View 1 (cartoon, rainbow, N blue to C red):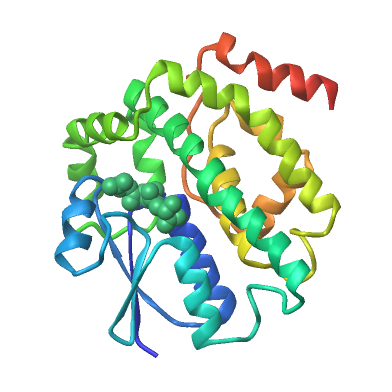
View 2 (tube, rainbow, N blue to C red; view 1 turned 90 degrees about the horizontal axis):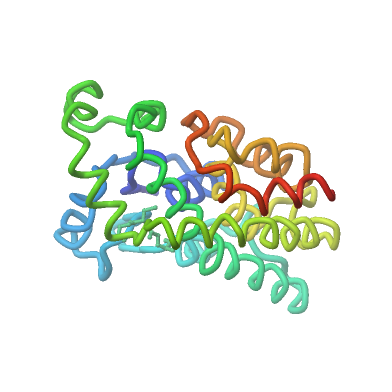
Length: 251
Ligand SMILES: N[C@@H](CCC(=O)N[C@@H](CS)C(=O)NCC(=O)O)C(=O)O
């Protein structure tokens, strides 16, 4: 099987797709793209949309972390990413949908808001990325890319503050799925792989990690993605973090 994944360094759905490939034991090659540039590249490669992750699998083009999960189950059924029993599958699909449609973007907005404010931690998110130019050069020229990416992701003050206020509710919802055995079981499923990278990315922020790491959701994130690259020192306004701090104090 010939597999190549197109992703952006530090992309949480990109991490999800790579973790699922590893879980399936499918070897793959990776092309790391700059944000912004990635949009044109994936379209030029013939993918229907402009987002990563996108994979070529024996010539077939599959785009989107949820579509990739289904394709991987099709080409390599074991270990399954979805339970066979319909009710259990529906529960996993709902948690996976939440991870993609409700959790992923707020975490993306928080991350780009912070990196636009101070891009000095950007290099820590590159990990082992191969960008075609030295990391130092990429970082010295990153400011316009960061500003543009923050803008097209609508990482405004207002949205980021609202995202942070929503986070405690998201964490409660995920912990409830762990408690109910929908995710976090012995056998990891597509919802684990969808949700955990978003949480692992959130935990790279010193402002957020203390409110997450000691909860079931924090332990799950580290189990699924133990080595998420990146570290951002405190940067978020304390008033915006208040909902998270209050929730932590109660828990
Ligand atoms: N929710 C989709 C889309 C992922 C997505 O938005 N990826 C971002 C990087 S984290 C991206 O490609 N952004 C470029 C764009 O929106 O044009 C998925 O899970 O595949």
